[in-house]
Image: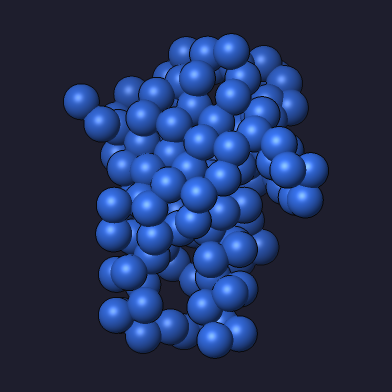
Length: 124
């Protein structure tokens, strides 16, 4: 249960990542989570449950929402000038996170935070 909470929290933070800086048009999109790699080993069944129907939506006005197995959240995001870091702030004020943007193009998004990696594809 502790690992599940840790993974859920890590995944939510990854989704919330986009909150402090210049927006990139490629980030403003709906992203389907396709993979979650964690520092801690977790059962495939748990990983699959976290990925199931998980989406992140980043809008051009700097807002985000997450839904699905990764948990529901919403808030604001910014991206640094070099589009290397995404910062997020939950509207509930309970969390703020900074994520490394490992990959961002029109079809793919990979975020890294605290040893956890979230891989997404753009929803067409």
